[in-house]
Length: 123
Image 1 (cartoon, one colour):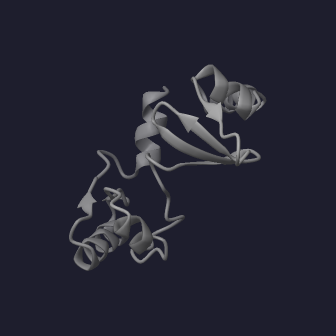
Image 2 (image 1 turned 45 degrees about the vertical axis):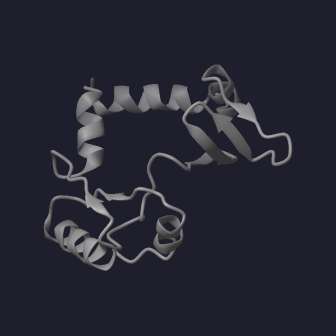
């Protein structure tokens, strides 16, 4: 599959309303908070086309070992894995994050980064 083919497929998927996808996967909208959904895998927050799965993955949006929300998640008992890139910056950020928070574990991508892994499986 070429990059353009992949983009065309992604555009088709993006046209499907997120609510349709969620209900087809068994999710139910919270009756008190319309941005919250209950899924078989845990709660999900939806705001327009953006979503946040409270039980899966969170991005630090770059190499940041001291994300401000991290302490709050740890205090609530979330199991945290850092999946920074396998380059020097990613390894340094991982060591710093695990040094500050010993309960965090490293989840090293088998390629350079997790995006490489995800795109490699779609080829």
